[in-house]
Image 1 (cartoon, rainbow, N blue to C red):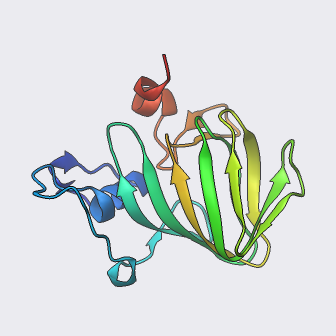
Image 2 (spheres, one colour; image 1 turned 60 degrees about the horizontal axis):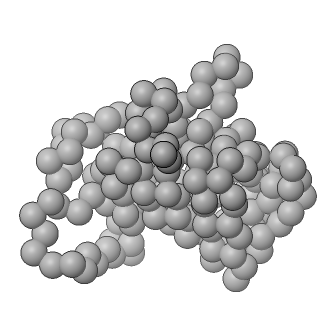
Length: 165
């Protein structure tokens, strides 16, 4: 993969998927932008068992809406929600595996949102399909001390400009 989408350079990794699938052309003639997820391919992420169909992505602000599909037992490792995150579970469930809300389970037909600054490990014991909305990309905490985004890029260098105030 590579190249550009909507005139925006595509970086390798997860962010490139967002750009290829979801960037609205800057010359759009309308204020409504129809996305057809059924015609989109599921894109692998760097997280085993996690795939995405990005419905909206703003590469300047990091705003993203995506369908996320998790295989049974898939884990989204230690991460922090920089701003509010919203998730509506369509199938399966999403469980806080580690963190202050450990054990809380959001099941199909339920909605969960997480406050700015919340940190946890998410787990889908039976797998799951969900609609997720992020105001700014998550910070992922690596064992070596690095703080990165979902694409593996340094979070501060890539998204530090999105911080409030």
